[in-house]
Each structure stands twice: as C-alpha cells, then as structure tokens.
Image 1 (cartoon, rainbow, N blue to C red):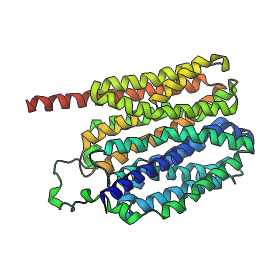
Image 2: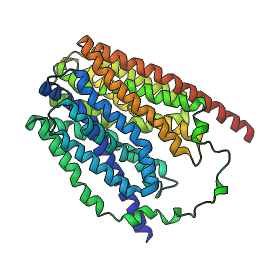
Image 3: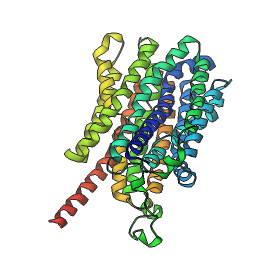
Image 4: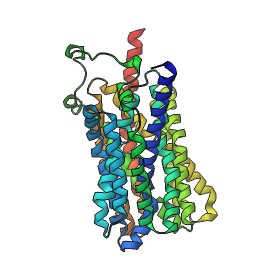
Amino acid sequence: MTTASTHRLGLLLIVLCFVMGMVSRGLGDSFSVFVLPLSASFGVDRASVTGIYAISMLGIGFGGPLAGVLVDRFGPRQLVLVGVAAMGLGLVLSSLAEAVWQFYPTFGLLVGIGCAALGSVMQSALLGRWFSRRLGTALATSYSANGVGVMVMAPLAQYLIEAQDWRFAYAVLGGFVLLLLLPILLLPWKRIEAGHPDLRMPAAGPGAESSTAPSLRTAVRTAPFWNLCATFCFTSVGIYSLTPQTVAYLIEQGMAPIDAASAVGLTGLLMPIGMIGFNWLADRGGRRLSAVASYGCTMLGIAALLAFSGPQDFPLLVAFVVLFGISMGSRGPMISTLATMRFRGPHLGRIYGSITLAMGIGGALGAWLGGLAHDLTGGYTAVMAVSLGGLLIGGIPLLIEAQRQNRIEAGNSILKV
C-alpha cells in the first residue's frame, strides 16, 4: 500500500467515524422533538414519554462495555454493522408502536445499543489502529460529530413530523439508517482492520505487561474510580433531566416547533468548540479551572433558559444556546483523560467501560426524574432545579480528581528536577 493510499484510507476512516457519530447521537438526541407529539398521540404524562429516553440511556451505558468485548473479539466491522442494524431497526419498529411501552424495547433498547456500538468504543478501536501521533486530533474530529448530528437531525425530524406525523418521521429516519448498511459492507475492511503499516507491531508476551498496571478489581477499590463514576452519574442526571424536554419547553413558551428544534440543534453545533476548547484549557490552564468554567457555563445557560418567557426574550435564548452549547459534552473528555492517567495499562478499556456505566445510569435516572418533576409540578422550574442540582453535585468529585492529578504531576516534576 502506497503512502498516499494509506493517508487516504486514514482520512476515510475519520469520515466514517464522523458519519456514524453524527447519525447515532444525532438521532438519539433528537428525541426531544418527539416528546410533545408522543404525549399527544398516546395521551400519557411526561414521565412516561421521557422514560423511553431513560431506557435508551441505559442501553448506551450498559452497551459500552459490551461494545468493548465485541470489538476485541470480532473486530470493528461487525460492531459497526450491529450498531447500524440495531439503530435502523429500532427506529422503524418505533414507527409501528401502538402503545408507549412498545417504545421501550424499540427506541429504548435497540437505538440505545446502536448508539453504544457506534460511539466512542468503536471509534477509539478503529482510529487507534491508524493514528498514533495525531490520534487525539482524529478522535476529537470524530467525537465532534455528536454536536453536528443534533444540529442536523433535530430540525430534520421536526420537518418530517410536520410533513406528516411522528410515525412517518421514524419510518423515514430508520429506513435511511438501514440503507447505510450497503456502503459500509463495500468498504475494504481487511485493509482497515489490519491497521496502519507502521503500527502493526507483534503482540507482546505475557511478561511484557506491567505488573503494576491496575486491574478492574484493583480499580474498584480506589477513590478515583468512584469519584469519576459519581461525576459521570450526577452530571448525566443534570444534563438529561433537561435536554429531552428542551424543545417542548421552548414550544410551550411560544416558539414555533421548527424554531425550537433549530435552537436545540444550534447547541449541538457549538459542542465541538467547547469540547476542544475546555480540554485545551485543562492541559494549559489547569484542570480545576477548566472544570469550573465548563460547569459554570452550563448552569448559567440553564438559568437563562429558566428566565426565557417567549420569543421577545431573544437575548436570553441566545445566552442559553451559546453557554449550554459550548459546555455540553465537555466533561466527557475530562473524565476520560483523568481515567487514562490514573488507570493506564492493559486493563484501561475494561475499567473505563465500567466507569461509563455510571453515565448511562445517571442519564436514565435524569430523564425519568425530569419527566416526573414536570408531571408533579405542571411546569419546568422543578425540572431545571433537578438539572442544576445534578450538575452541582457532579462537579465536586471532578474537582477532587483534578486536584489529585495536579498533585501527582507536581510530584513527578519535582522528581525529574
């Protein structure tokens, strides 16, 4: 394989990961535009509808470790095909639902598993075979698809709903996803799974592994493991108690449905800016400063949303979109960086996969609590109080681990002098 063709194949894989991330998270997070249509169609309370999203978050959380096992045993090709098939089938079957509970196995379980299969585990395994020095840049590019996906898919879903109904929207979106199976099958998977020629290294023997590398059993006995789990869990409670209902809130405050969906889509467009920017700040200005700035922006954005009372409050809407958008998703790389530094070694994937379980559990709990808070109070003030409380609690263990890592690095610097 020539240098030029190797370079082109590497770029193709970044594009593939970007598209998979854009489709999976974009379609998963566009659920917010379906909340009101599903509530009206089935005549159920908000908690019942947001419970669908809660099951999806559980699918993502528990699917992460499963995706790691599958990609290690069968390779990226099988994981991608499973993810696309699960997501497409889940959306198509959702269009046929006759009761809310039928969304739990279709959108909840199948779409959740699809998101997990096409997410960070697959992208890291695939791009890690082709990039070394620029792996961080490649992964940052592919992860940024999450925000772009929301920007594209939320308005598209709203347009399809307005063109006919929510059943039509799910059928079209699911059919589109299933059509992706054909071009994916035509990719040169043997060359892709072989990896970059310069990175094809012989497997190390059993004695090559560091005896000091932490195992999962060792990790779960440490405070950093549980602090990172707590950060993932409570931050997810804070985010997902609000995001499934954001479009509904804006519509009920007087915005047109397509404008509300577009505003939420814009928050996704800004996600890559904060995802890269806050973590650049973490490397250069201190991890604690970056964490405080990230959580502060999110909470100020929620405060602006709470004060928003209609289209006449356009500056408040802009404040929400900008502040919430640039900070959304920025904590994930912070957590993964701290986990990598603390648990680096041959068992890191298993350890980090276990930590991500807390994200799925927190997201599910948050989505359910947000819907319940709305039903009990008939408004959104309690919803946003749950969101702010989760973020406040979630930020504390992250600050503790940031400080711990600062002390470790300071100690290493002294030893090198």
